[in-house]
Amino acid sequence: MAFKAGNRDYVSSTAELLHEEFTYTVSESTELTGDTLKRASLLHALYCLSLVFLS
Image 1 (spheres, helix red, strand yellow):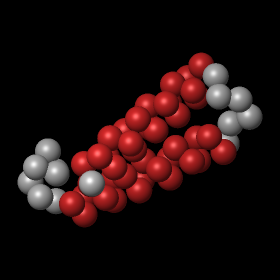
Image 2 (image 1 turned 120 degrees about the horizontal axis):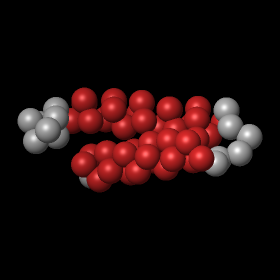
Image 3 (image 1 turned 30 degrees about the vertical axis):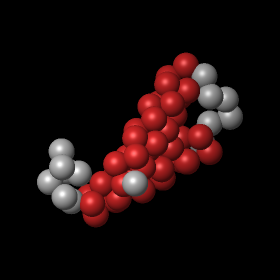
């Protein structure tokens, strides 16, 4: 919705936050299993999707 409205800065800052949260989730875990793996996968997918909107 933000992209359609032309708010590229909003999408960019959201992508940055998703990347930071993904990095934190992965770095704080000794193993990526169960809920942690699910969370990391979802964050990564959302980050990749946000990059598509920015290109």
